[in-house]
Every structure is written in structure tokens, then in C-alpha cells.
Amino acid sequence: MQPIPKTLAPFFKEYSLAQLDQQRDSATIIERTPRFGSREELRWLFKNYSREQIREWVLQWGSFGLPEPHLSFWKLFLGIGA
Image (cartoon, rainbow, N blue to C red; front, side, top):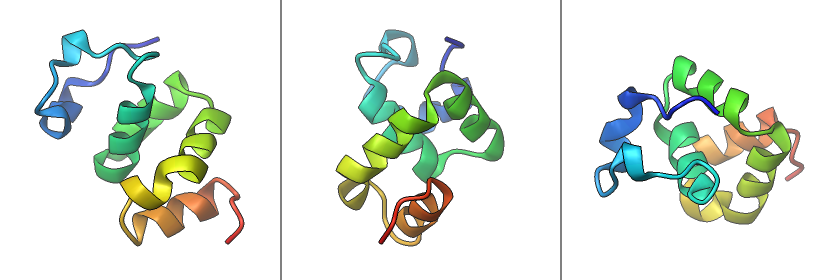
């Protein structure tokens, strides 16, 4: 896995990027990157996590972790029905 982009640091203020474990903390990383990430950061997300893993997060936690219209966009993008 590639390191978490330093440009995402402002969205993880309560964490040290160096101490975030990309496997253990995947739910937190997947939550914040689609919500706040740039195109480059989103590319990083999809290189480091499978589409299915991101899709599963959106199904399980998206309604709690993503505001509208973010949630609707990611559901459409990931092929999740209404």
C-alpha cells in the first residue's frame, strides 16, 4: 500500500497520519477520503482499497458518514440501488 497522502492530514486532525494503520483504520480512511478528498486523493483511495471494500463501507456506514449529496453520488458511482 502507498502511504496516506499528506494532503489528507487536515481531515484526520485527531490522528497522526504516520500512526494510522491502513488495514486497521480502513473504515476511518474510507469515510473521510470520499467526503473530503481531491481527485488525486480519490485515485489513491481506489488504488489502495478495492472497489468492493469501499462499496461495502458505503452500504454499511455511508448514511452515517456521508452527507448529501455525497452519499447519493457514491451510491450512484458504486452501483448501489436506492
